[in-house]
Amino acid sequence: MQSHAEVYAAEYGWGPSYETLIAQIVSAYASEHDDEREAAWIAEVDGERAGSIFCVRGPDETTAQLRLLLVTPAARGLRLGAELVDTCLAFARSAGYKRMVLWTNDPLVAARHVYLARGFRLTGSEVHEMWGDNLVGQTYELDL
Image 1 (cartoon, one colour):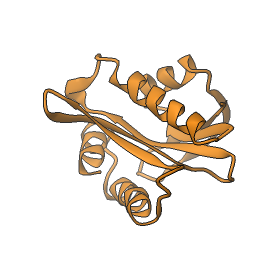
Image 2 (cartoon, rainbow, N blue to C red):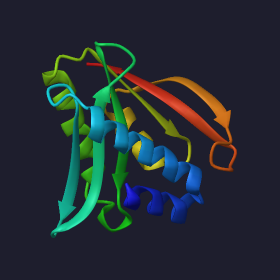
Image 3 (tube, helix red, strand yellow):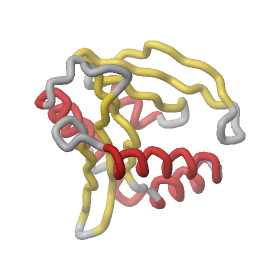
């Protein structure tokens, strides 16, 4: 969680309100998750944390939500983001989900490439100023 907020603060200038969102997502997972239908992974490279991803229940029983994909700057270029997303998708399928959704923002180009390469399709977008910038929030979906 701290790494996620620090990386995005350094790279995009997203401040305390973004860190608060991350803390809320992680806290909800830590206190309420269903081990059979939700999971989180932390990737390591040479013994150092290098990335993470969450798979949680989405808006209904048949929909999973991909959350908080992060690859640290030092681990970029190693296909770690692709591996994390593939792990999340495989888990969602094995847990019985039929669809996966995610919400991201337009500056996160590398993540978007990973999502599109796996068949996610853009289903919605809207401008917001949650973290002080004019950002475009994007919703993607994938049938599993």
